[in-house]
Length: 205
Image: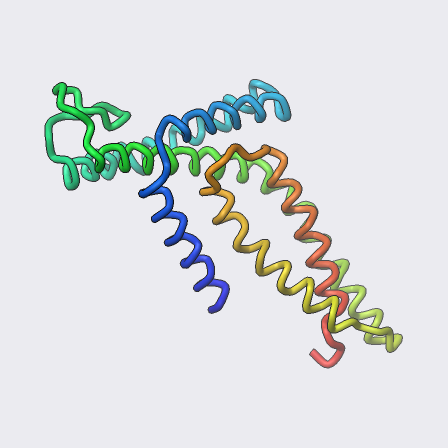
């Protein structure tokens, strides 16, 4: 329950920060920089597939459903707008338009980061599942041989896993360019935390 509350609080705070302080131009520059880094790490073909998938998901879930258009109609109901939220009737851009432009740019960037994260996820599972099994086997061995289990290591690993569960939510909204290697790094740290927590679970559990 506490973890859920923390995640919700982070989402609320980040949403307000986006709505108040983020500018669309800055987010677009971040998207371009992350795309460049993805090409350098994963190759141009893989980068194009990742970003094409993100674009398709954004259009099907946000644009085609009418959410994108309705958000502008509700807050700035002044004429027809293009895909970037720009008023095509020649009217000036209001403060609400700037905030919506920035918000939807951040949402689009989140779709791209989610697509990248999902690309790494199968490889992460190849680490996480064996890690959990190995940690549990270590616990069984310690239980049968009366080996020492460290409550301190268990606590550190437990809170580390809680932070790791929150990280993907924060990752999607962080307001600066992120390396495409962050998801596999997350998986490696999660692997170590899972092994440590499982191996040091108290014997009577």
